[in-house]
Image (cartoon, rainbow, N blue to C red; front, side):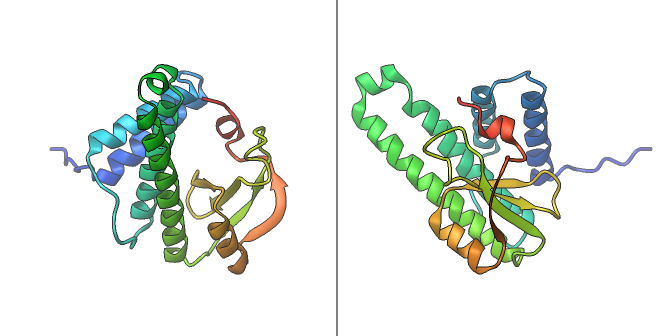
Length: 183
């Protein structure tokens, strides 16, 4: 008799995310398809962000939730037909993107505070985008394999510096192929 172990919401979330990352790194899906599939998966989960971050999983989920919404809406904002027909909608979408990124950065701060800024490193990454160069930084959570966060938030950067985590160097991103690929 086999024992069935019920998968938690977080198990399903992390498995799906790993599957998408695998498909992207193998070249089976483009960055645009990755962004779309990640967004649609989060939408299907129908799980809103957590108010309180009292676990690593909740913190990462919130980060991914807001990041997925921001990136998907960024894709939508580039739709020329939509912009021509509904410029007011594009303006609303752009305002939402800013709010999603702000919430993503708040989620990072809550997660890092929960983790007490222990066993992590942060630094600027080499970006091909002129806009992101010398602004985009990477946070690597060394206790969690493959967990790499990104931001351009000055407030987050200042907090990382005050906690002694930020290194004043520029490095190639650990996920450079993804970060520097346009979508």
